[in-house]
Structure formats: C-alpha cells, structure tokens
Image 1: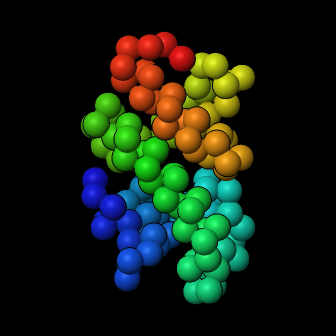
Image 2: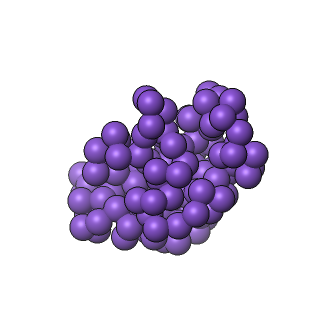
Length: 116
C-alpha cells in the first residue's frame, strides 16, 4: 500500500498504522520498539526517533506485502517469522535493534534468489 495511507500531515501516524493492521496504537509502539509515550504525545510522535522507527517498520512491511498479498499478512510475517542467518530473530526484533537496513538487504537477497 502507499505510504500516504499511514500518514497524517506528512508524518507517520501510529493511529493510521494501527487501523491498517487492525491493532492498537500501543501495539504499534511496541512493535516499533517505542514507549507508549512516543505515540501519545504530539511532540514525541513528531520526534526523529519515532518517525524513523515507524518509517523503517513500514518500509519492511511494504517491501514484503506483494509476496503475502496483503499488508495484514506482511505485518504478521514481520512480527513472527524468524529470518535465517539472524539467529532466529524476526524482522521486528532486528528493526527494533536498529538493523532495518539488514532486513531490507535480506529481503532483496531472497528476492534475487540468494538464500540468506
């Protein structure tokens, strides 16, 4: 899906993301490795850290969505499927620890037929 679906006024909006994935804003915060405060206070939602984490999460999910046929299924994969070569960590765990680029590279490698 397009990025605009997840945004309000040019910023990633936890509420809009939660609606798309049929969950709560609090769950989105946990999934992105953010505290509850980061998605409740306007100044924290606008912070670079919050926006970066939300952007990274959406980038990964958008990249695998065509493979799964829906954003909801891609979100489930993001949260639960261990990635080979990463000690059984999920995409969510890697993104939360600042390794979103590694996840995106892994997806590119799998798409290219290279088994990571």
